[in-house]
Length: 338
Image 1: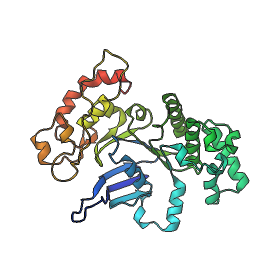
Image 2: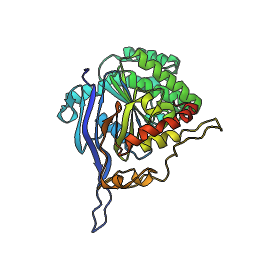
Image 3: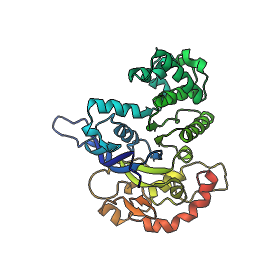
C-alpha cells in the first residue's frame, strides 16, 4: 500500500466564542475529530454547506491554523514537530488557491512580480530566471506572457483566477488546496477553469484537495469525496459510487438540491431543509433535527463513521438507505451528476 502524502488523525479545531460577564460560552467546534488519508497524485473533494468546517479543515491541512487536538502529517512528519526550516520546505511543497482572486492578489504589484515572488523568496532562480519561468507558467494556464506587466484590476475574474493558479503552481508543489476556487466565477468561466485543472492534474505530479459547496463541479474534478456536516465527515468514498448510491440522508439531500433542466424529472429525496443547528455536543446525530428519517436511535447515540459497502458512512440507517437509493438514480442522471 502506498504511503500517504497527507494524513490526519482525530483532527479537531475549537474556537473560543464571546462570553458574557458571568457566563462562559462553550467553544465552537469547527472541525471535529477528522481522520483522512490522501495518496500522492490523488484528488479529494470536500463538500458541504457553508459553516460545515470545510475551509477550516483546508487551513489545518496546510498548517495555516494550529489544531486544538489531533495531528496532521505530511510525508510522515507531524506539523507539530516541524522546525522553521521544515516549515519553509513544507511551504515549497504546498499551496493554497483562495475563493476571491482579487483579494488574494496584491493590487500594487504586477502579475509577473506576484508569480515570480515565490521563486525569489526561496532562492530558486535569479530575477531574470524567475520572470522567464513565470511567463512560461502563465502560458501553461492559458494566458499570454504579455500579461506579466499588468495589474490585477486590469484583468477579468477568470484571468485573475488563472493567475492565482499559476502562482500556486510555480514552485511545482506536491499538494494544492483549492478553497471554493471557482464559486465566484461565471458558469462559462467555471467550465474553463475546471477544464484547466483537469489538464494540469494530468500533466503535473500533483495531489489536490478541492473544497466546494457546488456538487455540479466537484463531480468532474476529484477521485474521492468527503461530505462534511457541522465539522464532521458523515460520508466518504469513491466519487461515482457516492453520486449513484448516497448512503447518508445529508448526502442525498445535497444531491437532490442539484438543479435539473428537465421539468419531467422530480428528485425523490427532498433537498436540505432548515439551517444547520447547534447539535454538536451531547448525544445523538447532529443532523437529526433536519433529517426526515430520524428515529429514536438517532437521538440516543451519535453514529460513528464506519466501513460500509466500500466506503465510510456515519448513519444508523445506512443499511435501509442502501436498498432505497436506486429509486433516485434516474433523477441524478438527468441532473448530470450520475
